[in-house]
Amino acid sequence: MWFACIRAYHLQRIAFVLLVYVAWIHLIPFSLAKDLLGRVFAPSIPFSDLANYCQSSQPINASEFHERQRRLARTLHYLNASAYITEPGASAQYFGNISTTSWKLSERPLLLIITPVLVNDSQVEAKVSILTPRFEATRAKMLPIPHDGVEYIEWSEENNPYEIAASAFSAEGKVYLDDTVRLFIFNGFQKAIPDAIVAPTPPEIKELRQRKSDAEIELLKCANEATLLAIRAVHKKMTIGMKESEARRMMSMALKVAGLDDGGCLTLFGENAALPHGSGSDRVLGQSDFALFDCGGSLHGYVSDVTRTVALPKTKVPSEHRAIWGDVLFAQTVASRVAVAGAIAQDVDASARSFLDLTGRGAYFTHRLGHGIGLEVHEEPYLRGGSLDIIKTGHTFSNEPGIYIEGKVGVRLEDCFYIDGNGQSIFLTENVGGQALSPWNP
Image (tube, rainbow, N blue to C red; front, side, top):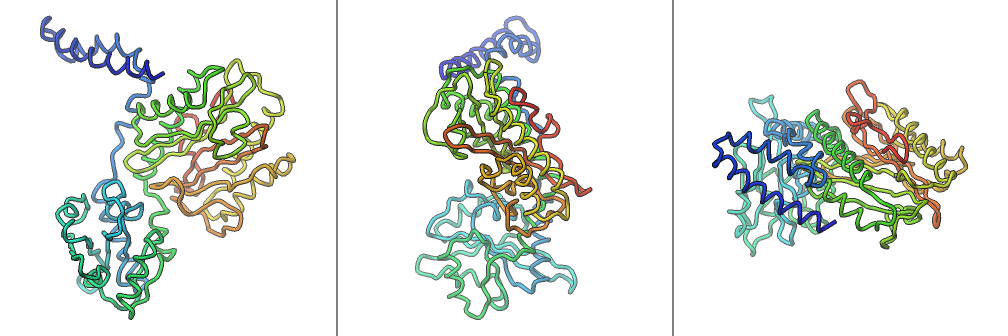
């Protein structure tokens, strides 16, 4: 496999040199020479049919970031709160385009602070501030924050950063810290501004990120479509006798070719799939085995999560295992029908679980039905027993029932979905066929 990758890389370099040579010597247009050589070399590039599947997708634009900041400011004003504070991560990425990729967390806090400002006694706008270590200020000012007039608040090593940060807002009333903020930062603000109520993010603010915009859903669609297409492409190249690690490397390559970042795949053969997160072994695919792929990648920060349990054309799957596969698919379908705007999260989980109980295999469905998905693979709200969260338009979830009989077989099928403007659940993979049709047709 690795030899094929290296060979493809060198062939691409050779092709480029030949491209320039052919265009120059024969005085033909560069584009025509490129087309001719492309036909010769394209078949040698692994998964070339997936190339740049999401190339037309665009990152979230500045105007949407500005609207997010305004909505947050208006929500803070409605809640009589003076500030919202978070550090690099998914929430800072959502409101300020600051991820842990652009700024790694350390013991020295860099914080995004958004405060409501009343304009003309009626309109609420967002003031955006960054608390930064003084010696890191130049680097902090290079962060691509989509806001005009960001205020940078610098703190020196001898200062208390939380007291310095409080200069950006009224240190009275309520100050909300994102749930992901580390405990020492939370405690630091409680001590620095004792007259304020320092509290975790309330539901009204959490919902801003949970309910996705049209632009976000389009990114999630393309990421999930590309992931499913990559699984199908690898499925066609699999062979009896290959190792889990070989299939995993193939999946990583396919996801990369498709244009996804940070692509990866949990790959489990046979009874290894009975442990939902794997056993750590490198099993060989046998004649009667299912192969489970749980894969994802990132597109402009938005992630995918797709699982398929597949069989090869020559695989002789036991009839009991085929029946389990069919039951899991039906449970997924039942849950998708129940997941509509206004439904309670625990009821969606219960719908899949109740069907599997009827088959006598419900006890082997050992984890929740699903999780929210967006800038994080797992985010609130969750489709699980005990959750009273109400499903709303714009919510996005995974739908992933499974049966896990240790020592024998594991089957999981997963497609993520969103709640559209009509309140219905639509699979993010619908444009490329949606749910699996059979173990041989994922």
